[in-house]
Length: 547
Image 1 (cartoon, rainbow, N blue to C red):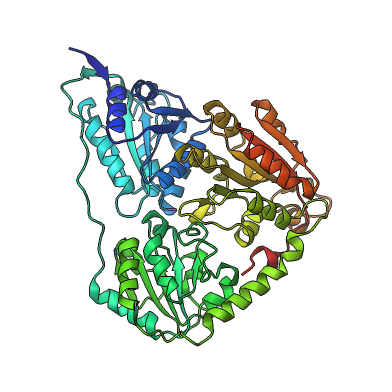
Image 2 (cartoon, rainbow, N blue to C red):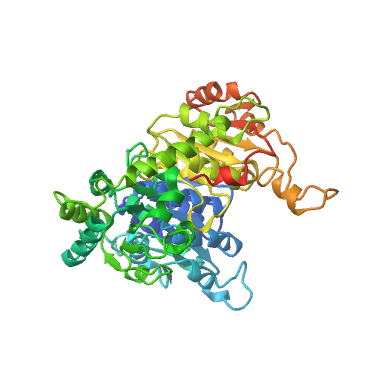
């Protein structure tokens, strides 16, 4: 008889479920789980902070369409994952945190790192549970993995009291859960499909909004067909690329005009939250007709006054609506709606053309993002993080593939950019992974550059170093002239972090050097850190939120 501990059992169940990469921070009582994963052939990515581990795992899971797995120690280690669980749940990214906790024998007595970890996790999760015996570990891991990806993806927490991790059992006495059922995607009600199709057909100014749920559902085919009938669309920041941004019906550059001018809007896999101004006036017309496709019925009772709510998989629903509209006369034909939006988009793009071409020093943010756009291949994963950098990227950086443009998402959480790029590179090693990050956001997770170098994840980190939060604009506007630097930062030589880990490093002050430096970094075959000195006074509020 061979005995194994509970940590090895958890690892075997993860391996059985097809998890080949997991993240975390080495800490008790979960070292046995990490050792078990390594023994089972799972790549163990030991990060420098549990929050970063959660973000990296979330990105890995979102790109792979599998649960991203994090292993965290007890007390503060697990509590450090709460932000990651919340962000994953709100941004609909699949994440499972396996957190160690105090032995049951000392629970309630002030045991080492004792905390009510399930209570900490619960508000930010879809599902929580606590292991109650070593023998049940495989079953509970199986449940956790399934909950994270079912329906709308999100965060899941499974608590491991230390005694069950260490306890040894006969390895043949505890069966693994071997696979799961083939689950059909929720298919749309034909009557609701017809109602939405009729709404779009009769609209003179129809508009489709594409959210990250459409990316998760791989709805590219149906949505490309739908907009190809002559219906313009606008994508949410992480819905970009479901339909390639160079599609002639893409109106992201005319976002404001499209939202305000539409008389009928179909939301596909997104939410009428702050990103789309709650579906209300003045961002939308007061008499606009609204329809929504979502996999969660509760989403249909939201801030917006919906006329139609279709509970279904976005891919199946968009195909069905496209079928219903094919061959049907659309009222928008001949109205000039799409042409008017293209004119507005061209005007907006021309308005930033001078800034994108600027040769001034310090470097303009628009010029930096344009050079990134022109240097990277079409098949690239980009993560963007920071206030000004993220706003400008929305106007400049295109996306051509689903789930290939990552940013702080629904919560607007800073600190995601570095670990998202790390997780993305591990999920899609054949693709370049580029992180475009403000200096303040970079600082939130900068030590993960060492993690990337250690595990061979050759991410290119491009830092827009403008000396603070939104450059000096907050420091100058919100604090007295004689104030010490609060929102402003020191002019740090961030490129030295590349040197520190034996990677590619460069400092760029001349706009003409951005692209050749990026090309060298992409071809270096190692982690790269590029410190681009950008204008601390650059970026007007109007141009930041172009379109």
